[in-house]
Picture 1 (cartoon, helix red, strand yellow):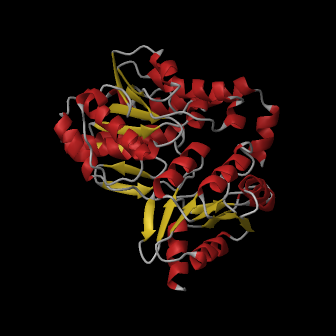
Picture 2 (cartoon, rainbow, N blue to C red):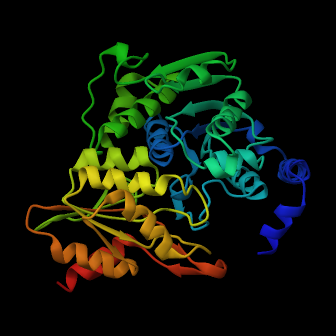
Length: 392
């Protein structure tokens, strides 16, 4: 509450200066660790966490010890712990401390998931990025940035910071913008064109969906840029299994239940296209932000789902039923509105018939539900689904 009030009365440039100084102090305190370890940053709207995971797999298969930060976890070598911060990028001191710990542990690489919000608060500053990876871009965090153009420019700051290697999804309509930044070497990937595509590469992934082919190609490009052979890169991504809360199959029989993060219209549509669900449970991530997408998410559900249950997600200080009404408006008459998310999951499972696919989106493996007054409730869509399934 105090933080919100301060933002209203303090000019943006002073807030920016504050964040910049914190980044500088953090780097000084921990001795600028990124100068002694290769740092790879992955940015974009969707697929960042999976791409970070796959880059790790490729580098490890290539014989390197790695560290990583994603919205899923913090990893140094083989030690991994969940990211319970509800932040893709931790604060400036935390990032510098993490890089220092990775360096001391003997890691040669650190792979970071880089968010536009993190860039806006200068969390990427005073990190020497060796390579920048662009996954894709679609409207997101528009209210926070003021416009899609500002959102895109924030993503571009990572490419401005990384002077050595740029890796770009050439199939994305915003690819040309990211080509505009100078680098020593550029790699491209895509299903329609790109450097990796030109190698006539055939992949047998264990990951579901065409979007994961893009993520795998991005990771392969990173490997190639670091001198790892195509054969080793291919082996790494083909061995990779899913990460928590990303198209995760939590119940296999007599019907399938899949839990996925999917908080953007693009991600939601791609998830639905991949699994062709019968029953969909969804809400709208983050009360107080990106209100524009609520009706759109509902419309996408209406297009692909046989049955729709709109439920609570992370309302923060907003009225959760208002959010549900806005999503349900887009979904149309077939949408059921259930405020209690556990009850929504329960009803979805009760409705499912053998052979059906139920998909629960919006939270993935997030361990909390964020509600009014800054409070958070312990939560895990995967655990809730399993618990309610055993009661059937």
